[in-house]
Length: 316
Image 1: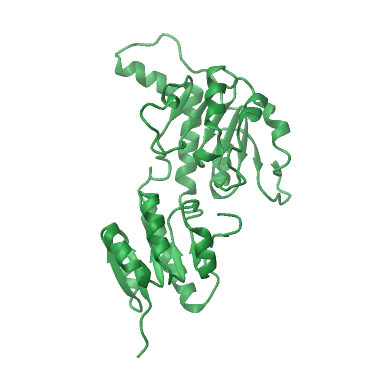
Image 2: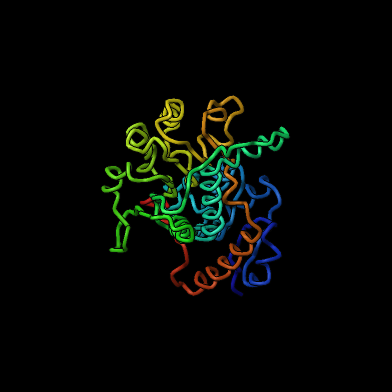
């Protein structure tokens, strides 16, 4: 009799996945303690947790993993070197949440353009404004998207509906119109009204945007970051905001997270913070993740190429 492969997954996804797991011996854990207990025995694991440090500890204990699945597109919190040495396949959430995150990014842009944050503050104070706090027009403005994967492409698609002139940056240009390489965007920063950051967090992208980049931007330009906080030098950003070197910053992500209550970024001028809600401001995230898991389970069983396999050397 063939022994069923052992799998460990959160009970949250059980209703969507269990009907497809007849040939697996699955433990559906309900706590981090249970996950830590079953992790060392699992061949297949799905250990996503809000507490990334605890999640990393559990994955580090899963020394027999052959396949690790995650809903997260960013894998910087995973023990990548260990997984690589173990020969573990890591499938991530690349593309799963691209559309809703792009919606959020465009919302942030619109909020910055018309300063809806100031309007809502005045509403709460029962104050009737006579003049608009934001008058930037999006039509015919220019946007740079740094990181042209699934999220970046969705941002570009949505901006096209506003007649925004989009230029995108990707690691390896493929000859697409208005797509430039990693060595070409800094010299052109002064052209853009909006700078979107949607690249992965790796050692190469840490502080990708710093003092030099802020100095090169228009003094009216806004930074919109839906990637990771580590891609922006926050000290340099605070200085740029204080000195009005840029128009402002709309940040879905910060470093660290959660942002401490006494952090100066909360009160920085022309700074909108949305608490890393872009990836969860949706209703079908787990349904999409479950569908992909089931597809990948078929590929795994058959020894076929799987969807959204992370590259350990690139870090995403």
